[in-house]
Picture 1 (tube, rainbow, N blue to C red):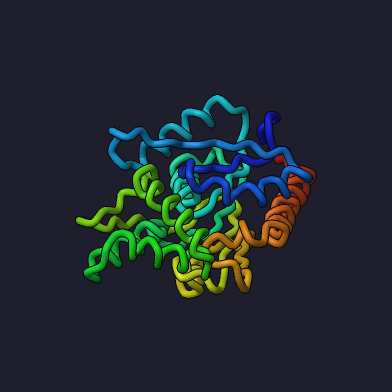
Picture 2 (spheres, rainbow, N blue to C red):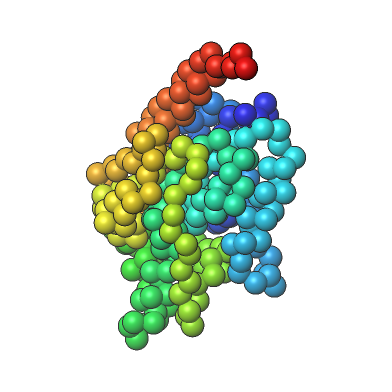
Length: 250
């Protein structure tokens, strides 16, 4: 485990990272939380692989393995990193990440643009209701602007011309998957599909409300689940380390 911090939280969306802050502030009262951020350059092609590569380069400079966590697109990056470089990940916590990790809000946005003859503004307004629930008009406008920027800045590879799909599988390290029962993006069936890849030490938890950004609206409840998961993982690791090793006399 790293001596520099307890948990590494990923963020690949500069404009949406404000919605992570209540949860991170809650967790910071119990653990040392570090944040790793990825910001795509304007002339850079959208590529999750580039974010994963840069994250791995950073983790190579960190001693030991880390507890890795992220929401949405950031969680998909954490999942991809954990599959490619498992030795650097002690545990994985995913919030609003489907078993098909490319199933992000960006995919739903472009699917609506492909399916219906509606404007960008109309789909963004609908996306606000989908992600955050019904909001006052002035809040809706601010959120539409944030989502509009996220479409440009996120490393999502979806576009009007093509929706991308990623491999579906589990990971070798302990994993916690959290979601919301009224999240239309990672809905209950999409979340329950994780059961095909969960190991005995893995956990799945659904909160009854909060939409896609349930960790913003209910940071304490989500934080308690994460802290309990990490504590149980630590107890399990200590128990395994304390077991006497068998030595052959031959």
